[in-house]
Image (cartoon, rainbow, N blue to C red; front, side, top):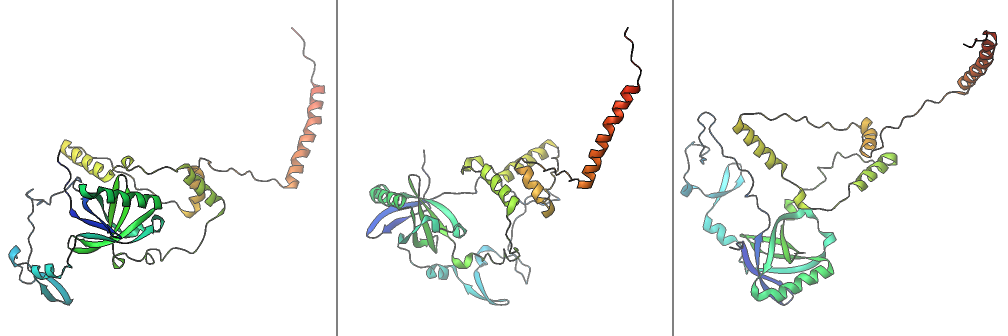
Length: 298
């Protein structure tokens, strides 16, 4: 059986300890359903071409060059060998700068995960690093040149080995202030919060990736099958957002409580009036029984 192909080979260094390692792809999109672009009229595949924006003429691959826009419509041309020369030299070493508590990791910065495994000659040092990180509950921050770019990498203990996640740079992560700018400055409490906590408590579980299926892939596969068989799929109704006035009722139903029925309170006057009617009815009933003639047997 052919083993997985390493994406990168180098070394990992902590203190004065160095061991050879390799990176392997941990996540891949190659199994996803892929589409081809077709000509609707002919059914033929469409070929992509690069067109000169001014002349409209096709530009062959050998005539294409990288350019950086400095002003509107003004570019600095960068040849392939010039770009390659500008990339920092790589010593193929993941140099650990610091160990940080796992609780401090902000997953917003995560980019792409890779499995980090040792070479046969470096297993002892690798296991020492892995077990030490597990015992201390820490992750490692390292830097190196990966795929022609200087990358920051977060390294964590994972199963029998380590997992290395490339990190986005700070300028690549957008601030959350704009996304949450319209959030009202208010807190919800009372019965609504208690019901929400109850629902969350009943839904507690553990993460198991195998229980989550790719519904998009399954839906597209079913659509393709239906098209081949000449049938159409039923249209789904779009979900309706809960209105603020219905939120409490929705929470009660989610918690299995249902609606609370409140009976209207009678005023003292109404209650007394009803009691008087009941008392008056009893003598009238007795008088009616006295006037009725006795029934004969047989």
